[in-house]
Image (cartoon, rainbow, N blue to C red; front, side):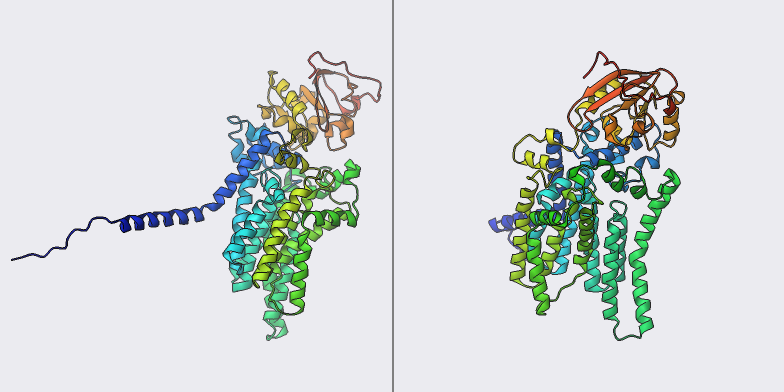
Length: 562
């Protein structure tokens, strides 16, 4: 009996090619799935580049100092967050700063804050890409718009420096994605997620409340038009139910923030009532740089930053007027109204005259471009050109010191120049103070300073538990009678730093050596403001009433002056 067998076939070249192609397809899918990781890595690499050249933002350093105090301080507690600014940029830094003793740049160069903003930046880019795809923009155009946003110089800078701008933008963009889903599909869950994300953004920037109001207005219009055939009471009930979904997360998040601030610090809205709040700082500083700015000046700055935004809006309005395009205005309103609010703050003098308050113009260019791109090739072309041109104009704008005071040092580094001497904050003198204090054998809670300027010393110290700062529960009890509370050293800065340094308010003549029972033991000078730092040793009890009201006493310089 003969048995028929199938001849064994050797692996051919085609089989090998199929295997290789299959493996490449798996790699492609894996890379596509994890591509936001590359954006994150790019941002972190840029952060290390900037930090290695000592270009820092003062507010970012203050947030890291707060997190460093919470993680390693003498009294780790929630109130150390400060509650003047939202907790989102601070809280994620705390786990990273547990490694601050192992790798000091996490603290001293604000790398912990940079990692947090890089993560938010990557999340925002990811959400923006999928927002564009789900909106109906082609994959090629979505890629161009996303990369144009991700590597816009202003977005790149703020994704690497630990500030609050990028977490705010990332949460808004994530909200846009789910709000767009609700517009397209009508699922209530998507609207709820969008509202939660905007509410969460209120823990980062208070302007997000304006985004909530914009969302509520758009939802009201959409639901009113969608229920045109229903009786009036039913329409009102439907709109009211949707408005509850929109407003409740913001009320919950912002209300919780107010409640914690009130119970822990005694101030419900420290941003508006505290001396550390934005309005108070603007009033105290009072320099021409942050004076009330005219509408023409702000408009000029906006036109430098995003000139093609006007072109996009013009095309959009023309298309709407001739009823040739179908446009969903929700996403534009959610980004555009907060930008208008910032414009009002700049033109009325309620905010510092900083370019970063116009940063929402960059995602607005992309969002308006998305509405153009979904309506044909011409719209896609205008959108892509607008985003690419905005990259160039943003780079040009941050190279103008009068327009981009804080961003100019980053521009100098990008073009190969030295930027450290122009940095928003200089740490040479505070670091010298921190190193001198570290060399002393001091107990915990024995150095009196404040979070505003003293934070620059705290991040340079290996022993943050030694410092008593303003977020501490009994800080103002300590400052009244520091010696009785174990304070042995006081860090002072010149009195022209204003009321935001409480030691100067309680002891206005201490820097000049006019407080009995104090001895000047160290002094450091450097660039930046303040440029002079002094450390006084307390040899006996002092109180605000003991300060000598005279300007003629000057402390003798110690031998170890920096």
